[in-house]
Length: 462
Figure: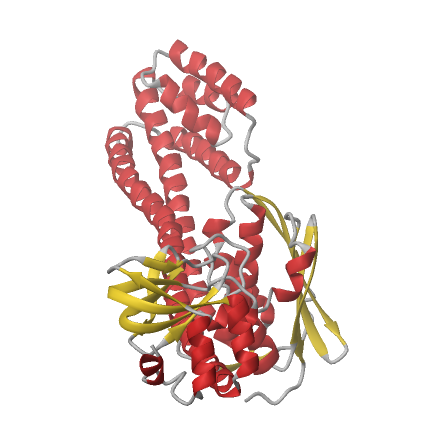
């Protein structure tokens, strides 16, 4: 064993007495290919050195195992959680038959005190590994986040696109009905009769614009009354006609004079023509609303990512907040209420636009997750001296007091394994504090979690 240890860089310079100490305070572990050495989120209780074989270190991101590192003979692992006092931030599996040297947490601490050369190597390796791990996880987190946003946007775009497609199909049928009725009426109605029909159409068009939607009981009662009147006129499809006319704000009184003026055999095509024009107008409104929604989503995505613009921009922070809310709209469905308390007179800020939107995304996404589908999020903005402040508050269960001081630490997360990397708030903190010379703070108690972002009005960005 002494000869074996001296071939490992970590122990190569140890004197014989310390080498012997390591041998006496360690044990050997053998794993078969694919066997688990330690699992992400579990308490860290051992330090390992690879004597032969190899290890593959992975971290769950968005439910997918992302490879962070591959360790060969001579490498070591487990020092980061032991030095930081955290659970394992990743999992490790054997690659082939793997032999390891295992040192307990207590003996690991004693070893560092006995040998400064090992301590220096470990700290240097830890710093590099944390940097490499953060870089890999950030890249994977961005891809995972992009995938989630894309899925949400696909859902958001699908709804108006489907509605527009459906309305266009119905419009084709409706226009055919209108043309058929028009051909029947064109040569047989007098100008006076056309004027009566046009008057009803104008009343309905106006009603469609300003009418307040009826409650279910009133709507049903009016439809039944109008259906009875239409059936008394011996008209076919009375129920369908009544539903269209009541929806447009028309009642029996609107049709009584028309029934007196128009021959009975022309009343059916006249009302069919009227119903078709009202339906066509309603369908066109649906198409307009759907395409407007699609355009708004595309515009929000473009502004959210600041496409075709320089990295450093002068922006209205409210635009970024609103675009982020639009992007996350699919997660706000249901019983989450968003209250905006904006100071719209705030000056524009020179910031890294896409990075700042990443901060809003992380903070709002955390607030949404905390509410679990029910609750309220309040977004406030105001000026405080030389700073612009943005506060995002949710009325969820809050963050336990004993972990609040760690909330901005790299890899620290309160979410289940695989649900969060623990880098979202760390990234947000660095974007605000390091990149924008501002501040990001947290206060939390049951029923109120408050994140405050402070951005300087004037600062020289890097």
